[in-house]
Length: 291
Image 1 (cartoon, rainbow, N blue to C red):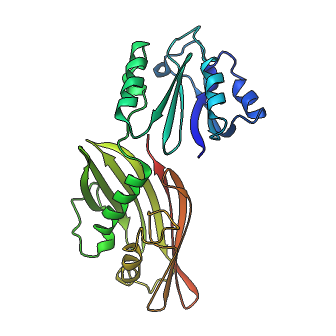
Image 2 (cartoon, rainbow, N blue to C red):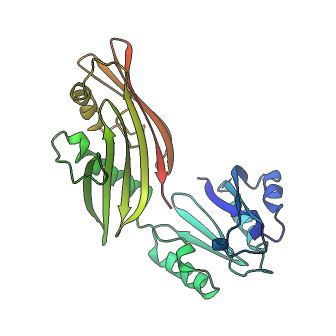
Image 3 (cartoon, rainbow, N blue to C red):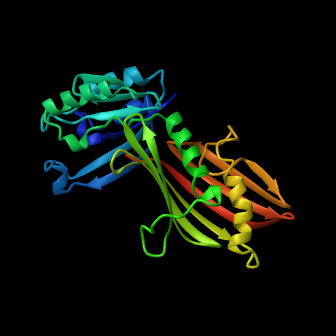
């Protein structure tokens, strides 16, 4: 399982190292963004941060993190780090110090954070134990979605924003509170957002969506009569991640279809409804982990 993470080129003794590692096949650069340095960055000797979103294969991760650990700049500041993770393991890489963390272990994260604080890193900048793995997140999403809009009779909660429709569901994950909140606006043309929180107000996962009914004679109630049964099947089709409905569902001449790419960490999907071969509804969604 591949690892993803961000490397700030200016945090390295040799800023071109990322490109060199890419040319050697040790990592791939998925995206690059350049940020103008501001006072809040606390790096006045730099004019910009070059942030590389990279992917590293499982068979290359050990070699890559070793080279990066030996290359972190300590001339100007001693508290740079970079980190890379997949669903199971989280590497946090400091100057000549590497933590290989089991993402299910609170103790592993505590040891890393204790070390980071000892070398002067601000607590708010450090990776945290997030309290659940992707399977736990999937299980909770299935439960939460079945208990809210998809149920058809779950009462809405207080609007969180002017004109919004809101659903809320929460449960416990070990000793932590875990909560799901869905906010949307509109009816036959709508947009909304779902967020999963862990603990007290810490957002961990989210999804945005925008849907349009393409036939003016189709009411919101008529659409709900097909959409709710489809969405109540969330999680039953193991071939798709549990963010909407199954790949295909048919009822009363309507055909519901959902196509999605990615995992719960990062995904993009589209659901459609057709009637007698005519496309009458489309909804696009995307989302993933929040950090």
